[in-house]
Amino acid sequence: MSKSELTIARHITAPPSAVWDAWSDPAKLAQWWIPAPIECRVDKLDLCPGGGFVTRMREGDGDFGPHVDGCFLEAVPNERLVFTTVLTEGWQPVDPWLALTAILTFEAKDGGTLYSARVLHKTPEDSAKHEEMGFYEGWRTAIGQLAAMLER
Image (cartoon, rainbow, N blue to C red; front, side, top):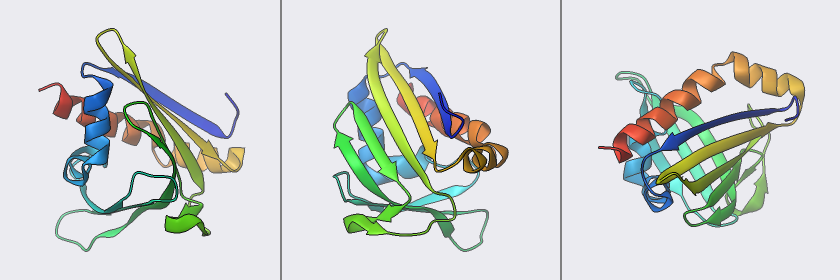
């Protein structure tokens, strides 16, 4: 693993198709994508290369603010999803507050899914900034919320 990459994984006792469904349905994604009690709103979820990925977040009764404004690079149902924040819908270049590319894999394993995320950053400094912002805690919580939703 390079110094500009952060990774996290968890086994979820649900099949890859259920994990894919939780990613591909905006109502389901909004339930787990951001650690509670922060609320998530999915504004765009076009799971195809060049498709937009826009989520917003809010705490309490405040206004929704930016979260992710990106573009999908790859979408292989039940297997793999890749998005970046350096492009928006239709491959439009942007200068995001945090440049990253996330590679998510859903591997059938031990009767469930090994959910893995590799998050690539432009520099080791950007990776360290993301880690300091709470990458591991936040992504672990979100993936835990996904697992709880699917393992009911």
